Image 1 (cartoon, rainbow, N blue to C red):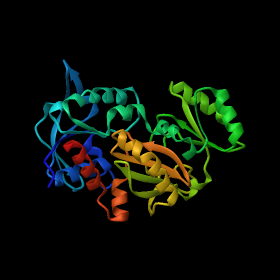
Image 2: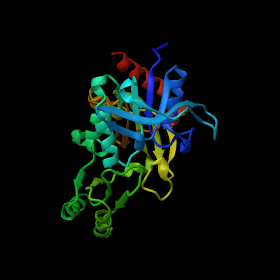
Image 3: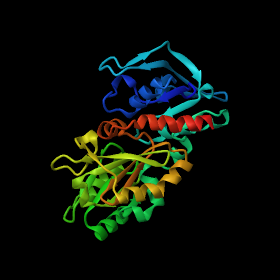
Image 4: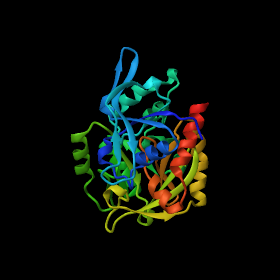
Length: 317
């Protein structure tokens, strides 16, 4: 058995998670089964005080019982430098609040606390930006807040998808076909509510057959699920009605993973979910990837166990 580790989990409120789908719950469940000690807190309870990075939360025990899945101990404030591992697992949006937590957690490195995924690279390589390092693997892509640039991109590619650069879960994703005249209106809408740029990509018709989520563990492909959009939908995200189905890895999937895997491993991105439509890489999700439970059900593999083996190796090193 591996050495018992003290593990703090920074996540959204655990009371509301779906225990049959939530990847963070599955990671907590596997950690507990491996003898690790759990402490849970929400991002708003993270603080920096006089050289120390502190978290106010609770000792945690989990069980796979609907409605009774989390038992909290007595509330306490802990110094995260005393923990072996911190799991950075709150969901996006990737806003300044999220970015601030990465800055604070980054200060744990001198203490030897392992933060997964590494907060420096989470901050510097959010999902829709890391793909820019691999332009030959991605569809034509534009990042801009300039309407003329967006119009020129649409004129060049005809059928495009436009979405917020730091969005998540399929929110705010629009397909603009060749005859669509809504770009100006969408631009006005987006820019009225956010200062962020937009990202546009050439529409990939293969999305009708699914948007594949490939899970990588310490840079190695662990398997994939396919998310098929609902009838009449462009978006395949499970949050908006997409359906998860079993799927194998293609040669192209393996080629993509072989290209990006060593980089992810070097960056300390232990648990990553990439999105592949047809033959094209569209996102590299490092902030709070999902898909563990669906993959485990389809393939019968202990993906959470593989992730913890990788964490344990890094913590021991």
